[in-house]
Length: 170
Image (cartoon, rainbow, N blue to C red; front, side):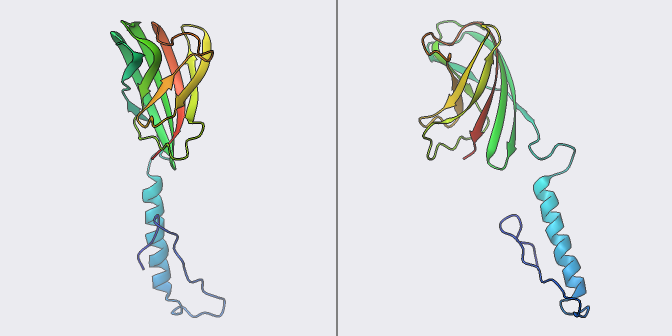
């Protein structure tokens, strides 16, 4: 039998204490378990950190209004089941005409199905000394938005920002 995993769970026949080595077939039992284990290993991967292993990506940073003139950004993400943890660092050296919320792309497509309150996370505004929410709502499937938690002033300013967004992957 070829394994059904990871599409569905396998159903093995367990021999009883009175079973002979051919009922079920001893060789087939070993072959089935070996096939299933190969499928499990393929799903989990190899290496020390393969479940949710961090992968680097370079985010794009834009603003709600205007254009950010100069920035650098780096990030990494890990996916466990259908949840992505996305970490990013942004250094804006010239905000140009940018204002309002700042948007940071994520390397996955966000599932916004039944998105009543949105996917989210937390961002550390290291330059301005405060923290606030990261949000992904209203059909935002490729980026998260950053706003100051008091919502009274535009977010985009020069300085260093770091954040973590936790999103459901489509």
